Length: 516
Image 1 (cartoon, rainbow, N blue to C red):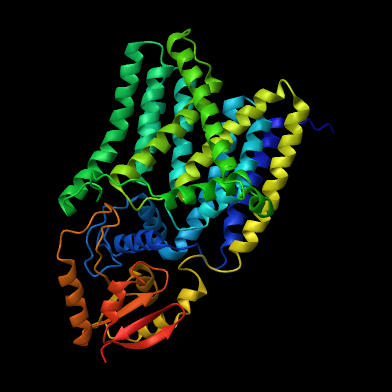
Image 2 (image 1 turned 90 degrees about the vertical axis):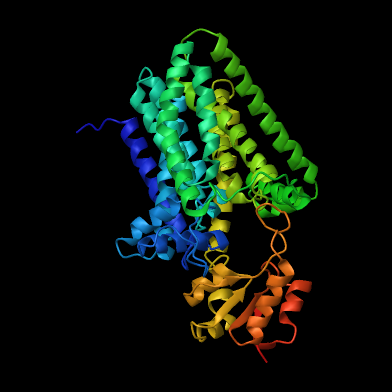
């Protein structure tokens, strides 16, 4: 019996194994659940509020206002899983594991369609699933995994639109996924700008450009409009953001450098050596972006003024390169004008890293035609270091919960004490999310001099608010829980609030104060 080698079948099986591997890696790295932060608690509590039939609300706060700062898609996905009996806290782990596996498969498909090479698609999928930085993103209960997944689907649909002779249904599908991405993260506006610009560049007549832009906007705008109207009616603001200038801080640039260094040099021992030369990472990052910018500019000029035929194989790579700059521009604009709390953290830069992996494989295919030996050596080196770093990352992540999922929080003496309080006693704390998570009750946030979103002093009487909180504690109507590392954990404000109070529960993680 003769068995013929079928490349597509073998590639499908390998891609399926990589997909399963992605799911396994997330589950293996999170034996105690996904990492948790303040934003994670907001998404989880929002999902619980949806499940309870109360709408998308701030269930972790006593005020219980409608949520507008965080778009609803991630919480809605968790609530959907919750309908089958799995609490959103546990459901987030299952969801992100599935998203890591499915995103791995999507990158493989995009790599194959971009290069017309099955091997290139598999290499791209392997680079994605073996990337330690991306794994860390998917092991945290945040919206970025869903955002990346929807973005990859949008790129696929956009490529199909040009492959199928600009058939409008594929462009509508692209718009729907972009709209869903916007409802996952407001940075989805970068996708809107990317595809609009790409439509005007890739189409060869003005009629096609305007018709394509009209179809795309008609499939995206309803998502944005409905959510904005809901927010205006429910809370009086569209996204809980104001147009206020706040420059990017030096510490934010330090965070950026640290995140980029871990992505470019995944081996920890090598990072220590290269960190002695921070200018090297800055120069390398600028060089990479400059090369991509020049390449995108040349392609844009070629498509816009050149012959009408647009190669299908370059649609994905061109829009991906264009998206990198659209996304970075949107994040910088948000930091400068709309949300001072946004930082260049790993999760924020993750979409850029995924896009760079796509372009890296495109570069490898181009070099393959000229210097195959160099490509083979580089591919083996990158995959080898990625495997090494992934093993190291999994070992670190699986040692215990990350963030609020750590035993430091769920075994906290302060949390144990707060759980014993009657629900009539108010809890003021600088870690509202964590207290909500481990006491199953909403709390009050402490008065704050500066709005973290606008970086501007609050207009309300701050001193009066602090005095009111202090008096409520003295009247035995409330307690004060100050946790180390959180906002307002030290300084004159915390000292004033604690003045004259009795520390009823104290440890290295924080102190709970009550009336004497």
